[in-house]
Image 1 (cartoon, rainbow, N blue to C red):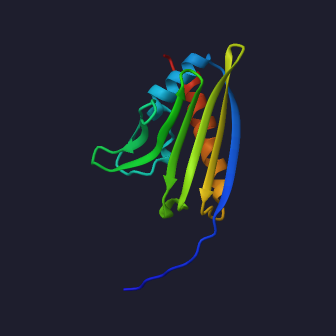
Image 2 (tube, helix red, strand yellow):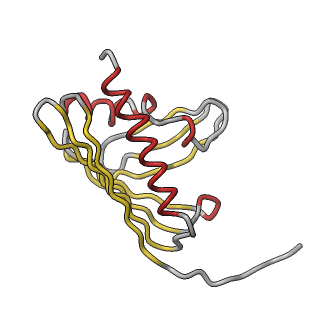
Length: 157
């Protein structure tokens, strides 16, 4: 048996992104809050076995990934909801995923004529592993540009 102890330096990092979605804010809000499984891309799922993303969009609610076989991962806990406008979330980043760190997510929708601007700010504090910002950027671009945007714009209802 081997053991190891090491000191990790704490830091903070923030990534911001905004995209324009060609759909009314009400539709974007519905897809984000009621149908997260439709836009959460497979490449960013962590629970094997055909997982499903489930969001309980109320203070104290959660964004959880669950598989039919019983595996699950708590992605975020909901801190606040501004109905139709914004979600404020917090989570923990465990060492296998680059932590230990706390993570905060703010996802806001702004009307832009008949379209919607989706603004996202994701912040970490704790151990920020080398490459964390690049991973945050590629992950959020994938989720919002290749997941949410086509799910909203291409969906029938």
